[in-house]
Image (cartoon, rainbow, N blue to C red):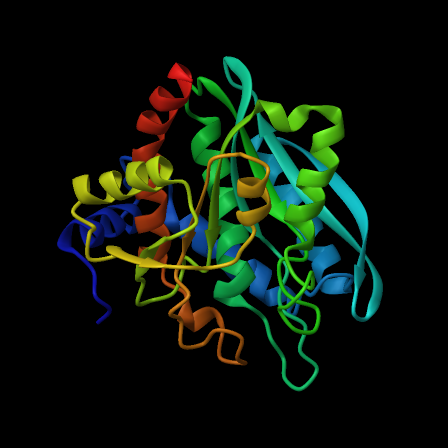
Length: 294
């Protein structure tokens, strides 16, 4: 059995029994989104698979009542120019300033084996769809943005600028229009569905934002998952940090099936998705209070 606290297990059991979880985030729904995305198959940038995944995200957000828009761009990669597209879902709040929840929905391109990225690409996209439903039912003081990023993965190898295409484009495009000034914080999720979840504090992430999330984990008695250890990771939060936006990366990079053919649906746990959902929803009121003072 994977390492989990009794509190987290009780929350998941309640969800499976049909009771609404206290946070409003429903891991059974999130897991079903993972299943449907994995059923599409590989979803690297520029592929028919990612086109299908993008349509799925748009359709599911529409069912929730969340307006979504595509942000299409041409990315220069080591394999030539590839058309990519971010998906941006918006939930209006009492204020126009935005809190962004982000994650990537592409999978790494492999020719030597079939890579469906259940956790790496699947869990983050599925999580954001369900998070949109939970946030839609909430009274939000700030506008909430669900940002599904294309091109997080390297097309060939993670070096130079062969990675984080979608986040870098988003920041570049937002600067001239001034819309970046309305972004108060970014919370990035990546590989948060694996069965043996261990999330460490990402060193480059904004300290107060990280602290708010880890405090929520402590309140929920989930410090065995949100560990007080640090790790340095380059991910989609970096372009936002470089633009002066508070940002945090919630990620478990210690995943045995990472970038292997074994990153399949059986590696994903609804328990893990519920844990992250509960912790982030639990941290949100404190984050909003802090931002309201700025």
